[in-house]
Length: 370
Image 1 (cartoon, helix red, strand yellow):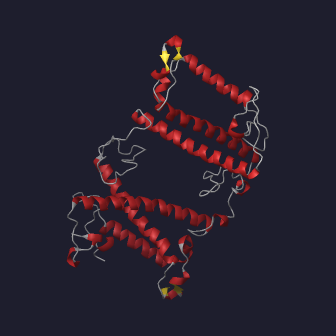
Image 2: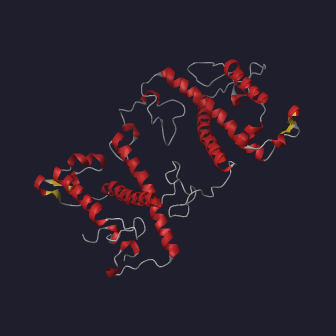
Image 3: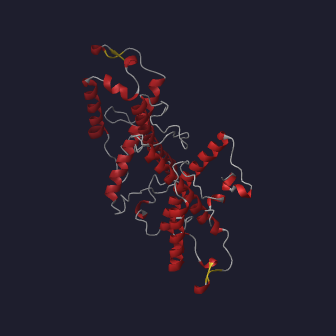
């Protein structure tokens, strides 16, 4: 038996007797492991692109995004965010078309998000469709409202959107996507004869346009979240009450709860869940060590030789991916052999024990036979 931090009993380690404290610590391990898996992937990504896990993105000189890095919407902390490389060809016209689509979708999403919220507090009095005896108060909020809208209502929406798309929203300057001459707050409308003065202060205009892009992006994520929650629970503000046989397992923590968006556990197969849980625990534990392995060498390295036969010192080995080029073949063989023996002979799953609770794991999880 092993106690606090995996300390063996023969060295004074005592098992955690309080079941609530034990549950809390096991949940913490799972949560920290998940965080470490995300962190190490981020370190790998940044190290591979900039040469350092802490590298400045300005060092990524081969970036295909340089052509648009000074455009509106390039804001901290992500900078120019194009993980799929859609703009890597540097095509200005394509970029402007996508930027216009982003602005339109963001503006619609902001209205849509407000449209979800306002009816929770206020609805117009009277009739929405007198011929159908349909009152505003009769229309539910969210996706359920679709079932109440008559065909004439859908036609009106399509006609209004089409009118704005083809007649009202006419680009003012192709080099300024999303600018339809509506002025500050966008209240200008040439069809109705309403004019609006543009913003004169260039810095104020840039700040306002960046804010619009940021808020539009947030609203697009928000409206998708509202739709998903509404579709699952019948209300955009519904609470997840669980729909799996594993909703009471360790790792089911707020704010996500039991998170299985791909439905891996929908068959309620306990054996498959158990296998995935101990794989998750193993990956999380390795990732926590890997994150420490990235961080510690920035502040401390062992003195002396790593490989005396090659004259290789610990201080000669760089941190991160660059270390691969310094590791001799015999070093790789040792790492593979060690990991293989631990996996095949030390950390062996025992169906009688909880997933990830390996009998041969000693202090801090180091195999006790070593």
